[in-house]
Length: 150
Image (cartoon, rainbow, N blue to C red; front, side, top):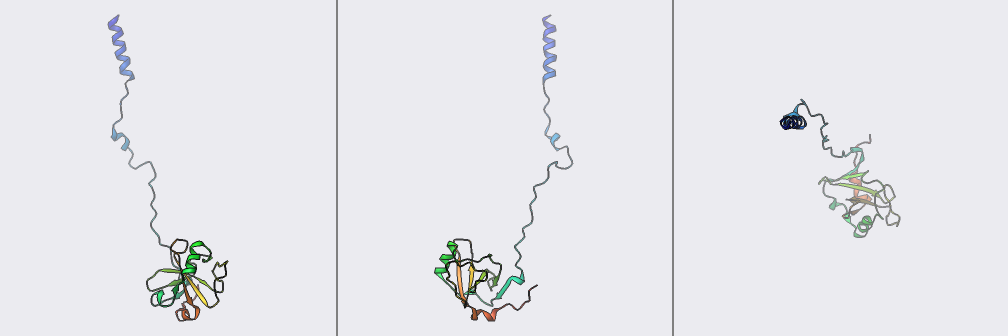
């Protein structure tokens, strides 16, 4: 009786043992069942030619000067463009500068610091390094971009 009980326990133990699956079992599919992690290609923001208003032949330093008071106001958000870089200056060093005119076009100036005969060029707006370059309107007329709007 004891022998039969021992054999029954061994048979029951064999039934309850689980066979582990081998690692090749997980590679049974010809392709992965999970969708791949998509990595979209890098696309630079296009600079539309119809938004470039002035094309400078040299550096911006030749036509404009940094105004420290307006630059400080720009960092506070009190003297900024209405739409950041919707109109641009293309300089020889290819840095994008946004434009706001003293007449109020694309310029948010609640403290009324602008004048009609000036053009305000914004470098790195919306950062703590915002610099406002001020140029007389007449000095930028030779650099006016003659390409037609589309």
